[in-house]
Length: 348
Image (tube, rainbow, N blue to C red):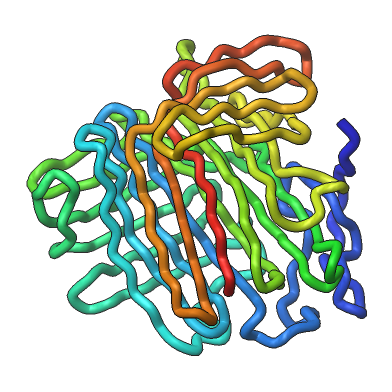
């Protein structure tokens, strides 16, 4: 594997709008400054995406807070492993032009809030080593037919834990860039999720949290493949992975990594193989360190075609089994780890 690791803080963009240093990092060392991007605000994409995985009760809860310049897109989704169904509620605010409050670093202390009357409201708050999420959706219809979804949860992200951050550009336009950090397998500190009349203790259920924090100036059309999962191994150690490819020039670095107890083990190029989205997916890397099979359980599929804007999303939730070889040569077995894999095409 030949990838470039960025180890010291660096200004993300040069004066001409191209990346100062492309590569991956174990923390967000890239300093993002929106006003240095050489593009219209309509071309800039920013988002915070949280996914709570509850293995004991068999569901994933997803919250999206995004600002694409031409619109803010906010979403609440639940994938229910017991019914095999997923439901989603969306809200759109036009011409937000990056005034929604999304910040320049995932490590900053901040508070984001969104509310849509009659649908849902939620907040994201980062303070110290804690990420606090609240949610109220009293009319939200769940996959099992019950109504109402509320949450007040706190997860821990230790300052000394590794993340996977990446800054890459596109070959056809070096002023287009992808800046991203994934925080994987954050552990539950306290709180509850109430589904209909049932209240779940997220710490007792050993729920985990994944954060997808993204900023960038994208090209018009892209297809990507992304997979992430998190939970605990047989010894009670938090584990997870982030795997992805398909857009931007990944020659300098990939975002492929396995996490064990807050330590990242970097992986190189890999491929997702499947013949049907609801049949088993196989994920393997070129160096023989990763070999995973995902058994699909819940499809979350949507397609929007407004001609100028097109989104075709196939996100499949399932369980992963297989193994990974760590940087120090150990073989770690993965058994029924909860997560997802997706294939997404966007023209935006």
